[in-house]
Every structure is written in C-alpha cells, then in structure tokens.
Length: 259
Image 1: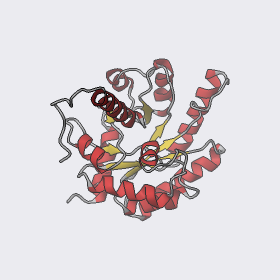
Image 2: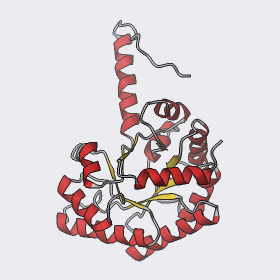
Image 3: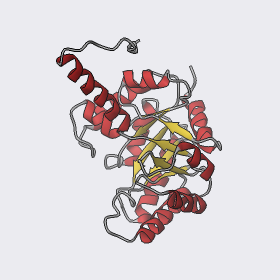
Image 4: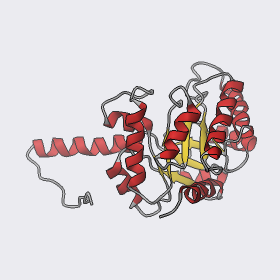
C-alpha cells in the first residue's frame, strides 16, 4: 500500500508536470471506482456539492462535517490513487478540517477564501499548509480557491482579474502550490492569470467558455476539474433511463458493472 506522503508527492508532481491534470470529480465509493478504472485517470477529486446532494443536503457547508468526511473516507478506501477533497471554506477552521481530512487519507484539498480580506485569506492558507506539514505531508496539495470571478457581479472585468491575481499571488506566497480560480474564464483571462502566477500554478473548472484541455495545457494551466458536472451527467443518464423504461422501453445492453 502506498503511503500518504508518497501519494501527496505523486499528486504534487501531477500538478507540476507540463501535462494538464484532468480531474473528473466523484461523490461516493462507486463513482470513485468507475472514474479510477477509466484509462487516463491519475488522481481523484471529490466535489462538495455532489457529496452533499448524495446525502440530501444543499451545498455551502450545510452537510455536517463528520458526514462529509465519512464519504471522503469511503472514496479514499475505493482507490489506490491520490485523492484531493473539496472542503468548501474549511467549516470555520480550515487548518483543523484539513488535518481531519488527512486523517482519512486525503493528500490534497480545495479550500475557499470565501472572499475574506486578502491578508486573512493568506493567513488561512499558511495555517493549512502548516497543519499539513505537522501531519507529515509537506507536499500536501492545497488548491487555494478564490471566488472573485464567480462573485464578480457587475464589476469591471479588469478589476476582477486584478483581484484574482492579487489573491493568487498572496496564496502562493503563503505556501499553496496551486490557485483555483473557478468561473467562466476566457482564454485571454487564463493567459493573464498564468503569466501572473506562473506556469503550472493555476487550476480552473470546465465551464463551457473555458478553452479545451489541449489549449489549457499549451497555456500552462496546471489542472482542470468539473465540480458537480459529472454527477449531473450521471443523473441525466438516470433520468433518461427512467423515462425510457416507464414509456415501455428496455434497458440498454452496454451497461457497466458495479464491481
């Protein structure tokens, strides 16, 4: 069995490699096994929205932390690959939440800045990385998230991007190996962020406006993930199946086994 320090190093190297790291987010043990068994998968990432929905909770730290971490534990147990967990804003104590996540086997995490003042958000990053180091994972991959683009509202695009750069640089300086800027970014905006933060330091989400993976790799992006989209795709397939059989149809024959 590969130790967590080794898994952490593997995950960090995947982010630092010139090849784009593509993470298809999972939400329970069976989705973890399906994605892990798919050729090309090198690591797994949980999606907080999807985990919460699976257990009947809305997103936004509404699911109790113990329940969320138990599902993360099940994901970790379902694979030998490195697992990074979406820990939302850290449930009021990001460093302690990361420590608990490390205890169940994760070697990376998303933690949102929740638009705290930059100094406070950077201090949180520093506290998380210190906690990970104290837990024996100096290579822990904190995907330090800022929602400045998602919460842009009607602010000028240039001001929003400048804020993302300021926050990203502060989080990198505080020890985060990668910065997550989710939102409907254009190729030009992504290029600006990579230039400001450095190659293999930016993480994005696969919104429709975001360039395709090959272009992201050429731009120097470290990672793309898909948040709740994989679960929504699975639920859409389930709904279509239900509609078909309720209308008198028969199941398809090319179904994947649960094993």
